[in-house]
Length: 201
Image (cartoon, rainbow, N blue to C red; front, side, top):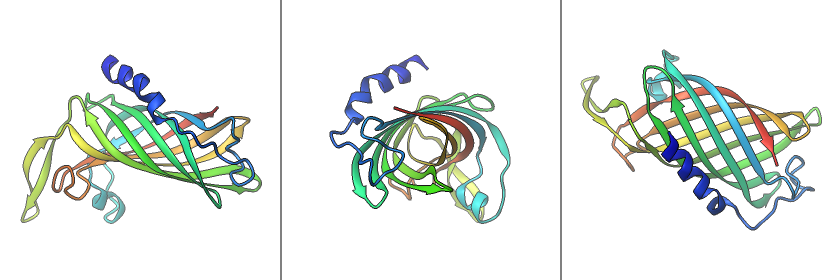
């Protein structure tokens, strides 16, 4: 756990961009608040994406504790911004891996009843120190080719809403898979649905 945390701290300056967000176009991202620090916890499942979203299957397989730091890199206009993320996610039961992730994505900011709200999605490479054994293929519906995949792709998505000055409540989705064969064909390690708290600075 200490090694991934040290890597995260060393890589934070590399995430920082030189373009500040515009206060006029992005209501909750003033020029002096380009950073977001999120702590979250939730339920993990080894069900694949199709099973969760198309078949309605969600069997809890453990819990996860995560931390993510995001940086606004550029204002894209109309409420959109380019965003970088570095995160750690540690699985606390039924698995004992810690994943380290670096992502790039887009955030859209708007207001709901005049309350600053945002939706974001990021994706990028993910490394796990003790990955679980997962199937990387099927034969007549039966999982085959079980492997431990240290390197996969991750997707992080979140919805935030302001609850106090500089503080947001967060709903977060976290997923590791082979990215349609980019990292590993048919590998789907699982997903996490979590709640958390986010500090803007």
